[in-house]
Length: 143
Image (cartoon, rainbow, N blue to C red; front, side, top):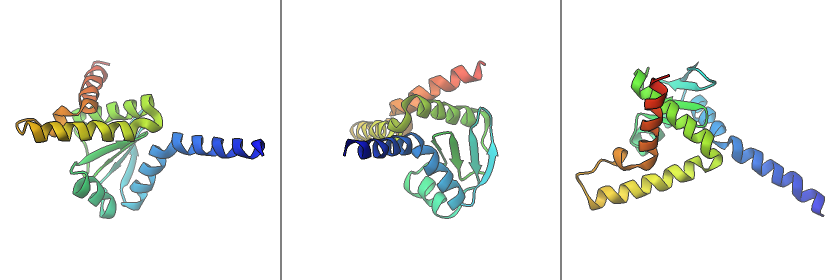
């Protein structure tokens, strides 16, 4: 009986390790996005439409998201500072692995609560993951 548990465990671990990339590539194809490679194995999905655009802009309220090695945007292109910031999120996803989305979600929830308590604050600026990405992007721009 023990033999049959290990393959299932391995399958679950492999799925979790690649979940962010699978989700992003599915959303990219689902949204009819244009695909290009930025560098370092990072894929940029631009001009996303349909349900993917609705998820990015309509639900999340942003123009661009990073998942695994992928950057998805409703824009036709990204400026260099935004691209550096999004590459920093890709680095975060590498550091955190399958915990990236839950950690980012918790950080966003904490930032949302802080903005509700202190309305002068900005949601993006109060998210610790965004602060970390800004710092990483600064170090990327110096390379």
